Length: 137
Image (cartoon, rainbow, N blue to C red; front, side, top):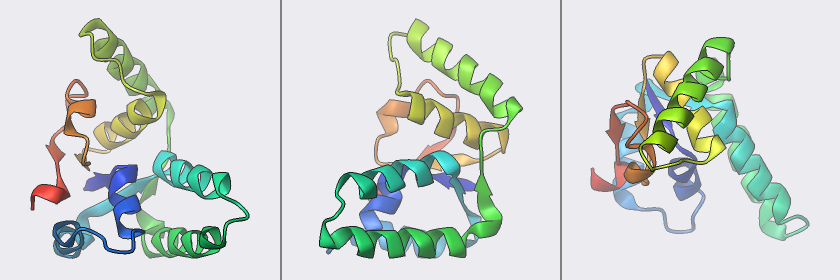
């Protein structure tokens, strides 16, 4: 499985998304998984811009992602919560602290045996995950 970071999904919401990202998503569609943390981050972004006209379009796109991958959406289980603590502690000790959201995304991917697709490779360097950038496809 390849878990998507928020920035990968957000790229598809742009008026002119990066062609490499769109091609990569098509190629790896059967392996893609989402975390509830990413869904929450996107929902937060949408609600921040309400009542902007674009919010309704973005809500529709998020609904499409959720529907399309409904059988591949993973949340923060107890096992992932423990992995989160380890990831956050390790990153802090290495002088590369990460955001709580990134730590949860990494933990969910790790406990489910997944890789992580992100534009921000350096943000996840301490998470002991295989990382991939769809922008470099």
